[in-house]
Length: 294
Length: 327
Image (cartoon, each protein chain N blue to C red):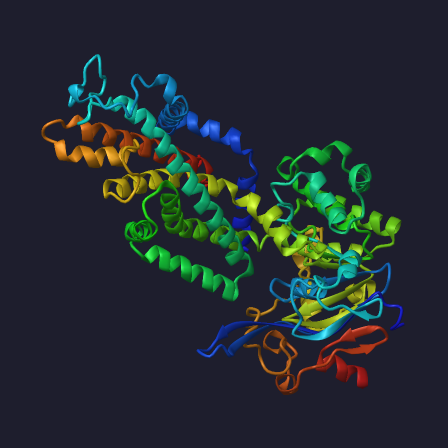
């Protein structure tokens, strides 16, 4: 009886208009609002990079080496005299792509496997979830590094490495949601109608998982950006002369005492964007959590 | 008589394994439905009552194929029904109305899509014909055509239940299993829904298996009533007969629990109070399952399980009743 009551409450919460709810909640949640604004700036910087970058990010000018931040070079220059602000702006493109694409790939894989595991149960569930356990038990950075070493360093391989590690978390969440949803009477009604299993998964179960997937997605992006930064820092990620934030920190670390801004500025950029995504993700989660609502 | 029945349930059993040993062999089984037999004639309503956990919902779900029966068979129009999923025709003959109008409608689909889904699945109507059919179904259950574009959360419980009924009707079924269709609704709405079900039965010639625990409502809608206790039918008779002359001690206790809307009578009348709780269905008592709470229980009741015996259309599973019949 109690679980039934809970199920009723949850279904009611799922039904409330999603976006109206979200806007209402964000009005009160300042950090989520700030996060959203930062992300809008970040995304516009990535999209408009050629128009707003003051210098060519690849233009080497040894005479301008290690310039301090000044009116001419707002964030200074690095060891090759390249403008750091321009490199940050161009680097946001890589961070954005690295944040979005592997997260999207791992979400798709995780959602499909989670739905199948939760819905079919038994052996299917067992095999998929043990696989997820293995991936999660492995140090994810190590796994990504192994992938990068074997496949070689390239943007595509970064996608593969990050996706391979991140799908397991999504699969777990989607599976647990599916376990709850598949007991709902609307799924039984569909079965009685003779709806095929994959149609039930697609039409009845998947749309009801979307709110959680959205939260996972926003929280997955900073993870992926951090993974890329780490891989690039360790030298197995993006290769020079491409402007990646992680790579910029990595090359700048050698001059940390002589010209600290070379390493610190991209480090702070990573921090801000990762925080902004986290704030947004937390905001989304709070907005969608029925227990945190007043 | 036997050939006329729309639905015939013969010795239906549904056992759930609740625990396994190390080798996967079942160590404990729950006999949710244990050797249940009954039949329903076309156009009639059979009420199925019993307290929580007695297996009445499981019976309905096993008949429609949501659960695979452990034993016994279900005949529909004289032909055995195996699982519904494998039997496309059966999906269109038998439909179900659910208890919880909040959980039974997909919150992310419009009412039009919910009602139209069975039409799509069985290829009954497309395009404009589908829109028209959906509107027809909605008006049949007392909703407006413009409700088709709305989402379930915009409706009240009673309206949602109407949507559920419209969905069940979409495929022109002959039999509808009503799994406690009114117990989640407000009392004022219950009557509306029951009246709608009766109206639909008259107009469309439907047959109902009406599962409920509200005895007054069951009396109102059913022609015959079956009483279940711990997975077994203990008494089955015509509604008037059962309510005026209950013979099984359990039925007598159930009926005496119905309050009488007159405070003076209610204050003085004597109720049959059952002692104790329902026994653990995983480990039921020997012999008659009801003997632990029955004031008439004898030694025979502990040894032998009583069979459902019919006399003048009134079937009872009780040793005491059987003996008094013989005498």
